[in-house]
Structure formats: structure tokens, C-alpha cells
Length: 467
Image (tube, rainbow, N blue to C red; front, top):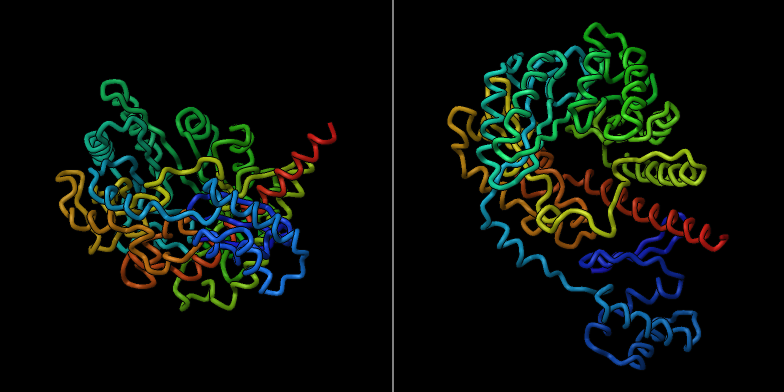
């Protein structure tokens, strides 16, 4: 499968199965789609030239011949028109023993904000307000160690609601986790997701010492953020959190954190929010589309897609410009590794929800991920008994790009890994489908990410030539 597209003046060709990316001139761009069948059929250069010339391309015969030779060389080198070798691999992946590597600890089903788009219903998750006890958290960490097999690196995210509302238990569980590392030959990577309202110097000092990553929730411009993320009394939270978040970013030397926002139908010009966050001094930024039923007034709609696609182009061009000026930032959805990237299993099956990754409620129930919490159809077990619904876990183990018909001919499938199972369930009633709006936006982000790589590589080559 080959995907060809134009972006920001670049002609880009992605060989989907090999991951090879080619930035090409017009004649190569025009010829690559025409040459796939004859090259795969083993046609000679003369036959290919004849076939291509019959499509009325306005190029000289010697140019067409030269490009045909180059295309055949790329195909022979495994960089073009490659076959999908992974579908058989997924059968082995299904059979392998799954180990748990990560937990999302819902340390607090309570929150001090009233975000309008919150899937957790201000922290309640379709249930009751509650704080996780140390005893429940301790059993969750014990479960993780006992079910992690020979995996050394384990991940635990302190999540909510708002986890700082249960800060002492967070600290106690970090200490307990550290006590498990040496005797069990494990290493915990703790992360914290917070709205920042309760952040102070003591919390920041501890987090900088113990948390591998901090996710800071902010939506962008003051008017955008305050509209969607107010306190329960209705007043905005922007002015409260911005100075604290700036302090976090600087104290961590602009690494190992993200400011993470959500854009909605109300701010379709979300590129302005990303740029605003960059102007505030943040260098690690993630702003993602809200996922909500179209009955919600803030939901993204199909008619919004053209505007949003343009916004990603605007954002990509801004990122390139700032990088070249020495004041760059990272945008999470534009970060792509074309040389290595995730392992094959991760590329095929995604985040590992329901198998390698589980969410834990304050009272110790297991769910496939935080977006399924409160849905009793996905209750997997609890910290006392362990996993008792292996049938549900098996269903998630089978969730991959080859189980989803909509992924079959999509060029993005090895980058998005089939998308979010929770979004599929919430929009279609089962996990082996795809959320169409999310797919459209994901494809655009991948195209922009590859273009950014091309542009920055071109700039590096120009610098080398200047030397």
C-alpha cells in the first residue's frame, strides 16, 4: 500500500507496510501510483515506460525511463510497494501470555473543577465520590508486580478526578512502590495528571523527585479555558493555574511534562490555543479533540472537519517556523519516529487497554481503561480476587488493526494502531470499530508530522551545505 499526498509544498510518498517515506519531485509523484501494478508483476522498464506513457503524462520519454528505473530500485530494496507481513504475526500475538505493565490508579473520584466535557462527571464516573485508601492502592501495586511477569519497567499513573485531593495517599503509595523495586527486580515509573489547582512547592518538589512525567490540564487561551474548565462556582481557573504550570515546566527544564488541553466545537481555531501555550513558554504541548456524542453542544461535528484539517496545517507551519527560529516546541500528535518507533505488537494493537493496561477505581475494581470505568459490562475483577472476567480481556487482546474493517485500507493504521477502543465502543457499541471523526483527524496529524520531518531535514541539509 502506498499513500501519496501534498502538504506545504512537499510531494510525500509513504510506503505503508515498510514505513519508508520519500519526498519526491513532480514526475516521481505522478508515476509512483501508476507503476505499482507493473512493478509487482515484474514488467520490464520498457513495458513500464509504455504503460505510464499511455496515461498522458507531460514528461519526456527519457525522464520517464529514468524514474521507472529508480522506482524499480526502490521496490527491490524493500522501500516501495512492500507486502504486509504483519497479519500472520498477529495470530502469534493473540496466543502469547499477556502480562500487566501499567495501572491507571483513580486515586480520587472527586474534583475541585466542573469541566463541561468531563467524561468522569466531575470525578464521579457514573458512581459515587470517593478517595482511594492506602490499603486499596497497596493491593493494586501488589497485583501489578505479581502479574507483570519478567517485565522490569512498570508504569503507574495517579489519576482522577483530581489526584491532589488525595495527596498523602499518593505519597504513601510512591514510597510503597519504591520498597517493592529491589526485592522484585522492578522499576516503577510514576506519573501524575492534575488540574493544578492544589499545586504548591511541597507537591512540586516531591513530584520532581518521584514522578517521571506530569500532565497539566489547560485548554489554551484564557477565554477558551475558563469557558470549559471553571470551578464549581462558575469562576474560571486559568489565572490560578498558569503561573503554577509555568513553574512546573521551568523546574523540570522543559522536559518530562505535558500541558494537555482539549479543543471543542467552541474553539475550532485551536491552533491559536497551541500557539498561545507556546507563547506562555511551554515546550511540551498536547491539545486534543473532545470526544462526545453530537447531542452535546460542544461536540466536534462532521462539518467541522475541513476547518480542523486546516488548523493542523497552520499549526505544522508554525511549529516549523519556530523551530527554525530557535524557539520550537513539541506538539504531541506531531511527534513521530520514522526510524524506529513502537514495536510491532504496539503498532498492531495500540495502548494495551484491557490486557497490559488497567484502570483501578478507589474501591479496587479493575476496568480496561479509565474511559470504561463505571460501565459494569467491563468490570474485570478487583484487587482482592484479581481478574475474574478473562473473557473480556480476551476480547481486548483480539482488538487490533486486522480486526477492524475500517482499518484495512487506511494508510494510518500502523501509526494509530486502530484507534481508541473506548471511542469505538461509545460510538458503535463494540470495540472493533472506529470513531470516524477521530480517524479523519488522526490521518491529517500523521500527514503533518511526516511533512514536518521532511521540512526540518531539508533545513539540516541546507545548513550542512552552508558549512
